[in-house]
Image 1 (tube, rainbow, N blue to C red):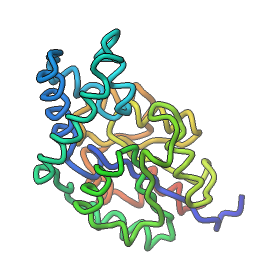
Image 2 (tube, rainbow, N blue to C red):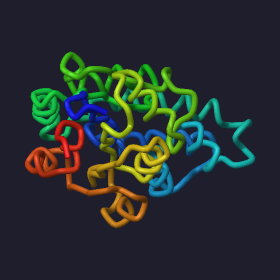
Image 3 (tube, rainbow, N blue to C red):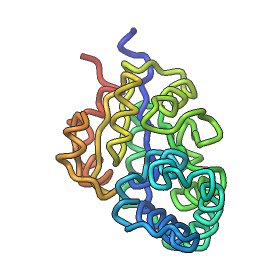
Image 4 (cartoon, rainbow, N blue to C red):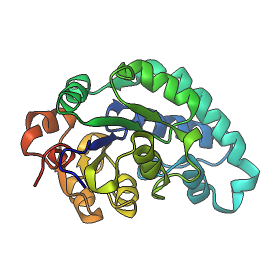
Length: 227
């Protein structure tokens, strides 16, 4: 692989670029409760990022066929109602700009639904700057399956050895590892540095703003530096 070949940084959105994990958690909690299957919100938060289908299967168990579709529909409705609560974390556009300036291909790599992506892209306001955006409609299997990571790599035609993933959950770390891509963790999704490190994150920062402050010394430099 030529050292001047373009590299990529794949950016998770929920909990990484956007403060949305707790909005999701409360939307799920309300949906479960109203359909007669109350769940403590912390249990839902622990599963945010693994993909809605897996989250539903784990929480509903043998009631999945009975309640799954109705819970999913109510979650979507409640998340949309709470869209004003979703905000962009500090440093997001600046990080994207800094990566692009270094010749990196930047991908917003999410498994969010099309309706959720519309909200997230509006909040982030960086879609015109990044090189590609992926969502649930582009992947067959959600995290921790590597499909999302591989789809993001394919979108910008960059091999795994020239890429870095940035995410906030253990599911991000596991999905990236299965695709052969190192993952840098951030704590903004509510998961501890110890858990992210134990899952295999090569480094953990408080936020993407903290990554930006340390950018040229961070593991993200793999995407543009040789050697």
